[in-house]
View (cartoon, rainbow, N blue to C red):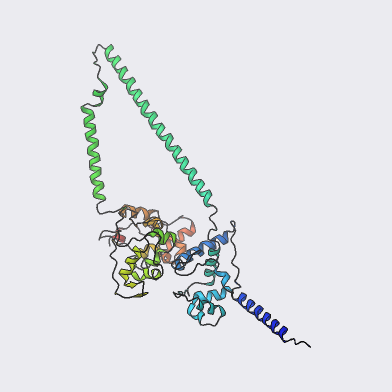
Length: 425
């Protein structure tokens, strides 16, 4: 009789392989993240909220389609059994690694260079919004071509209207010349009929005479005075100032391409008067691992290592750090008080409002004039968002007027934003 042991062993081996396969698949089973259709308004809103959360919390270390400090996050949902475990990982990575979960062993075996930062403040809904954005990063942008077409049409209309304007100016100047010529000839005929001898005066003498000289002197004097006053008013202002810095830092790369939020580096912007200049420790959060840039190679990052005391060969700090002596760009007079937290945290003002499209700047510059008139005009025009900020709940009178409809909006001027004492205390 033939023994069945070999067959049993083969069947056992097959069963073991199937078990391992099922176990492995269960670890990487993944979970569903919804696709967002073009007409899904709620989904597009979730994508927008997820994008803002991603930029504020994740973009410093992650991108969607490439490794930065951490891995690319596109398709991350396919690597987790369910959203609950991913949420546990995001809330407390260290605790999850020690939980004994099968995927925790996989994460440990990946030899992660930089530990994941915990984000216990993120709710499950917020994490879900981030995942929806990661899967649908371009949702809601389908209308962009139409907007661009509208913009092009607007530019075309503007160019067309400018053409008509110049044609009208040329027509009026020609008409004025003809009328001046006709009236001059009629005047000559009338004077000759009255028996007056009229001498023909060359056109050059008619134009360049004493009266013309006096008019030109008057116009020149007015322009000179205006120029002097304008220069005095602009004294000390530096609109367009873009100095060379000790390290070539590209906002276009960091903010525009890598989508790092301004607050990640300028940590004081929501907490104090000053936005604060980031120290080298913030730079080194990424540049311990990112050692070469797309434009300047290793040269500029080597300067960061020099200031921070980091040795890239030994992968550790070997010297005391030194402060980077950045050249200050935005300067206000000593008698002017300005508070970043009041504008950013309370007022909800975007950085670009005062600093321009920073995400496009290869070299940082002063965008706005920062003059008193510029600030006052902004206070006169900017609407206070009462409904979105409890800070303004003390203005009960205005709250009641908005509810009754006697006022359509409240501006910063209405709550004292143009009082002298607000800025000149």
